[in-house]
Image 1 (cartoon, rainbow, N blue to C red):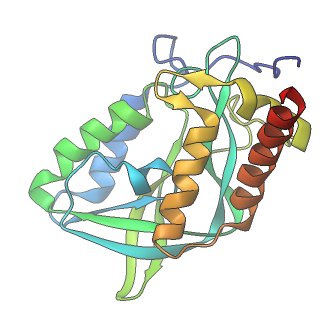
Image 2: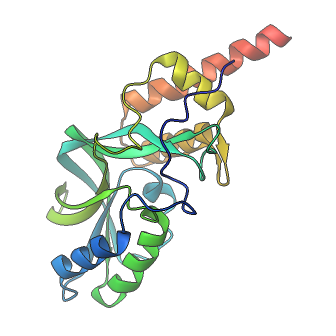
Amino acid sequence: MPLPDPGPPGLDPMAVPLRDPKPMLDRVIEQWGGHQDLWLFGYGSLIWKPEFDFAERRAARVHGWHRALKMWSRVNRGTPANPGLVFGLLSGGSCHGMVYRIPAHEGLETLGRLWLREMPTGVYDPRWLDCVTPHGRVSALAFTLSRRSPNFTGELDDARYRAIFASAVGRYGSSLDYARQTLLALQHHSIHDAALARLVRLAEDAASADAAGRA
């Protein structure tokens, strides 16, 4: 099976950043102000592995953006030679996820750690999004992905997804494990994502067919 096209460089934190992430962090801190609790919107791994303390968590929905497994990962879930996939938040549609409330006095430290995790190369566009929750609306910081980013995969057909799921592994595990863990976390919070469920089923069906062929 041929390896998926690695596409352009960008997700290796050892590489030259696509953009300097510090000005974006400074801008977010200025916009937040530091006087109120900080809200963060999670739509992928932040749901099942936030790696920060929070005072409150709520189910939330954002309009005008949707979760998509269309971002190359060359370290965490793949390699430069065989890149994997992680989620980005793309414009259009809507997205169910979780919002986290961080006490104001912990906001700066949390943002600093979050930038090291999510923004080593400045790949995302941090945005404050209006999030609808069962207890009212909140403005939360989210990491969105531009379709102009070199890390945006563009449209991938089923064969490409199958090839990536079958082979791409990075320092934190495989792309398929990442997709499965996200799907399980969404289901745990009663969030239905038909597109993700279809991709995971596609990979699992392909793995079962391969196993049957070797039997």
